[in-house]
Amino acid sequence: MSSSPGALSVGWAGDTIFALASGAGRSAVCVLRLSGGRCRLVLERMCGEVPPARRAVVRHLRDAAGAVLDHAVVLWMPGPRSFTGEDVAELHLHGGRAVLAAVSGVLLGLGLRPADPGEFSKRAFLAGRLDLLEAEGIADLVNAETEGQRKQALRQYSGAPSATVGDWAVRLKRCLAFQEALIDFPDEDLPANVEADFLGSLQGLLREMIAQIEAAPGGERLRQGLVFAILGSPNVGKSSLLNALARREIAIVSATPGTTRDVLEVAVELAGVPVTLIDTAGLRETRDEVEAEGVRRAMARAASADLVLCVVNAAAPAVVAEGGLVIANKIDLAPAPAGMIGVSVLTGEGFAALEDRLEAEAARLVFSGAAPVLTRARHVAALRDTVEALRASLACDLPELRAEELRLSLQALGRITGAIDAEAILDDVFNTFCIGK
Image (cartoon, rainbow, N blue to C red; front, side, top):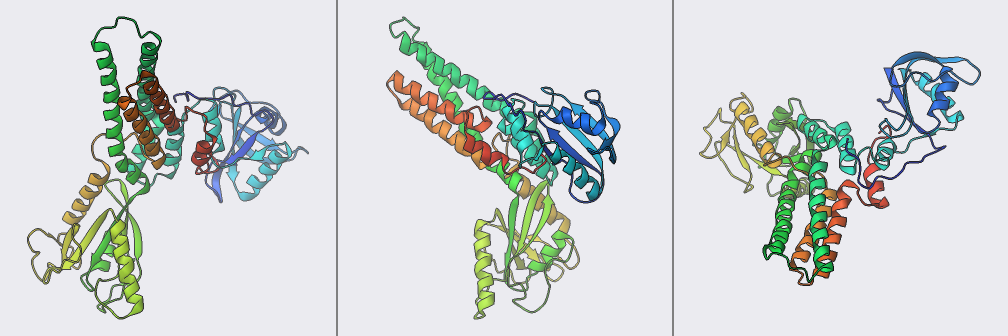
């Protein structure tokens, strides 16, 4: 992992933390992770000795009275060659709750405290073991539910986006240094093309950053998932389509119009992208207050959806929403009109082609062009500020003002990787982590 440019010395002497690093509940094995200056003391007290570094050993864990608590695998990873940069230990226990409670009680008695959310990763960041982009990649890996999310999170954790941002920072610093030189030595005879090359470098940076801002929605959509809303008149097969795509019974299917009144949601995976399918109330004029509210909610969800699936009856194709994907259902009774995707939810005809089209739409909305550097709103906001400062620098006639705008640009860029000290940013990032990370 690359180190953070703004890394601080950790220095958590006397403040050692522990947390469950595996899933909660009964299991064959559970892992307790420890980090801080008291890890050595814990191993001496509970194991009778400190095991060899970075070797898995089996030891009896004992309480203060010498009673055996568990027969566990123990790992000892002294700092600074550890994830957090501190002394780290792991206790691989049998997964019974009583075992975990007993060992946790001993740790509390030895002066350790439960970790806060994301505190292990925060300590790693402060020790310079990773930057904020890489830390967020860890959180995304933990939360990844689809193959696309896994690949994007692993790429971010591996440091590829950090390398891009780092390259921008190096080039910005060179531009700033050159601008400062022009201020300090205004009377030097410089070639005529020097300032033109300098301005060209700034404009090149600006174009690259704008391109990444434009690509950012794909990365954020992959993290958060897409929303596909199913709209249509009553009894065209919206609920049947939802059940077929989900491959289980989610919505009640009935010939009675107005059966679906509230918004129903189900999560599926399309082309490695998490997609929430939404079944909505049939769109029609009605005096029923409950059904009317369902229609209102249907239109609201459609307005915010990434894609609208407008389902019509192939025999009477009344399109109720423009700009979406029109699906003609019941082609077992009538052929699909030209330009519409024909399916029969009843017989399954055309369903494979529909799934292929939906996967293509999901991929189009997410995987457009090169892999994005920016995957969160925080990244986009910081880069927008960077771009605004860069634009302002190019508009400045006075070299002193241009240099100041370049400094502001560098400062905004540093918020992405954590190269500047901003406690509010750190709290916002790490508070969203799970406890054991």
